[in-house]
Length: 316
Image 1 (cartoon, helix red, strand yellow):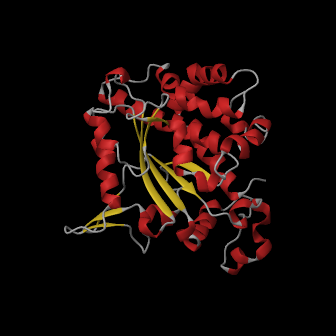
Image 2: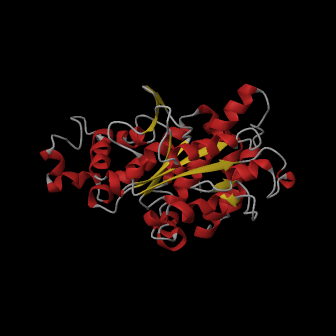
Image 3: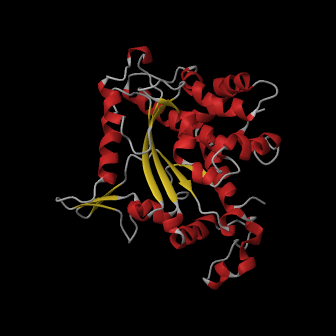
């Protein structure tokens, strides 16, 4: 059986494939495009470098468009593709990327990123949430052994239901409440268009970075706040659908996201002064959960197990 972290990763990726738009794009274009780039004998570098081509893979389906329905559909599929890619790169680490989901995101973390306008709770533009969990056996040991320390049972928590289903939500909520100050969170806002949306992540990052407000605006609830995490950051990831050759370091949309706490990324190779390749988000924000180098520390074993433990990524 997997550990708690890998159980969450598999569940998060399975939910992506349950989206008809994601599955359709996967079947018609994405899988083939990804496997061509990986080659017959892929290396860890081949997997990581998919980030340089993620926009091309995405755009091959023709999902991008200007009508509102097309924009919305394209946005959801871009989020899902980024989530798939990052989880593949981060497999066998303590970092999991989750598409916003009440049943998957630990409740203490959902509470911490909630912004209250008076008594009205507003969820951030958190398209994806990357969580770095502590280096603790309750997260890294096989889930069948979680009761070995009696900690869960001492708190009235059973590891499995009577039908043998892992009680993930109850366990992860308990663990993240216990270890909240040792967790790291990176909120990732994913947009297909850069021109129309760059001001949104800029403003949300400002809200989370601010130390206080005068208009009854508060970050966090139920005793949880992003400032109590071991680390918190906010990132922007775009395709973009506009002609990237027209974007320079002096473009307004670039200036808006230049100082994002979690960085500004796109689905192309890094262009200095404009945006970094999405692959660079791993070293930028997740080094504590990856032992600083996925190329040597985790991806080799992932490649060896793509047909077994990681078959749910559905490649090769």
